[in-house]
Image (cartoon, rainbow, N blue to C red; front, side, top):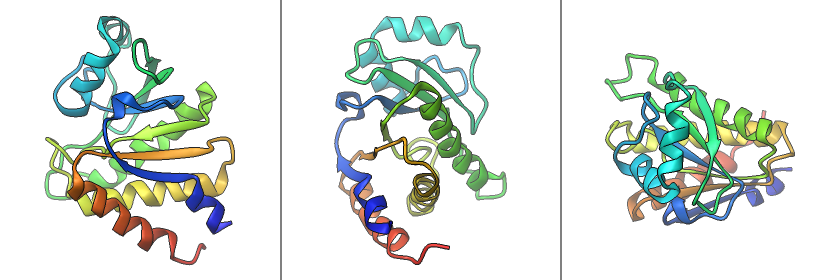
Amino acid sequence: METNLKERIQIVEGDITKMEVDAIINAANTSLLGGGGVDGAIHRAAGPELLAETKTIGGCPTGEARVTKGYRLPAKWVIHTVGPIWSGGYGDEDELLANCYINSFKAALEIGAATVAFPSISTGVYRFPLERAVNIALRETKFFLQNNQSIKKVIFICFGSDAYKKYQEVFNEVFNQETH
């Protein structure tokens, strides 16, 4: 079981907008109207149709997820999730970040996605501590995959070698622990 789980996760350094998967996850802001970082890159790569569709959604609260088409992206779908802004750990940031992964996986199931790619949610301008965020991401992914077979591949797209190394390190810790 554990080996199967490990095989369903891939960690790569690269550009999420180039991923040929069913759905990419966008680390969005609450307006869903584009921004900096991953969000801006996804909006630019998808084209103006993405902005036109997100304008009809009416935003997204932190921890939740909304789905749009991928338009000019190789991915058919974009799952937009809003990560928490780090404020020292006193504002339910861990729970809100976990909800980003839980709700993104639920959305992926609803649209029938078998392959999904995640960025490192909240670790850029939202300043969530990288190791803490990666632990939450990988724990939630492990729990989801243990309980669901329909998503065949989860890819974590790291921006930069520091993030890539941290994901590899935490992956080895999380997936070499005994399962409960």
